[in-house]
Length: 331
Image (cartoon, rainbow, N blue to C red; front, side, top):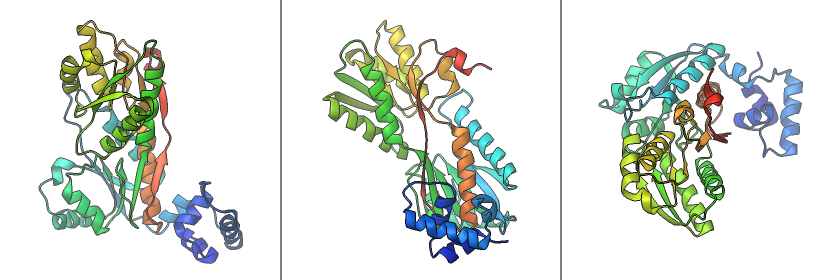
């Protein structure tokens, strides 16, 4: 069977370039497209990059390494969507997946983790919720011993791809829509960022700083740690003197809105993530809807391509700015 490697060799390009042409990615020159398409025709290649990549790697298993959210007593919808999307896509690709939680490996050395994964015939890993403090997982990525996909982290090397949305732009857009739709002028904005050690926190904070600079806003930043309780406390302390509250998660937006209601103060509030719970809070708030199920499915496709020989890359997916209502989420 002709593989994606054969096409790349025939066209004189990288495997990742063939994948981009086959899947219709932008920013590929017409000359390169012609070379790749000519090679595809000459070799009678069936343009299904994922299936071709997997053809010689069926025995490899994929570990889903998940950092469960322990900040809330509610069921973590995001992690459940991640698992659902990964398992569904793995079944379609005939890949075997295994779930590993951060708590199971946090005290192990790189050598111990590597040995454990290899003993279970793990060839690829997908890491969800990586922070700057997860040193052993950083070393695992840098070792390139496994084909790796990281969700929401800017890690790319020949054996590692990153899958996420444009966090900076999404935060900028949802905040801008919220502030501009407010009937009164907004000058002072309280921004409840996520965790200090988080990559998404860095990106989303950049988006807020850009908006504040463009509009000449006074921006006050506090870290809410993605906690509804922490957001509530910060809103009681700083919310009254702000004109709007922008939150880096929906749970924090719910905490902030509930605190404002108890204070009998009205300020616009927006969130980030698009979790179902936002539709039940009674107050409609703008948020960034990420399709976590789709994000995870794309991560499984990406690890399959890596297992087939494609080099790591940065994959940026779509999102929506929405205002969730009860009727939008019931089924």
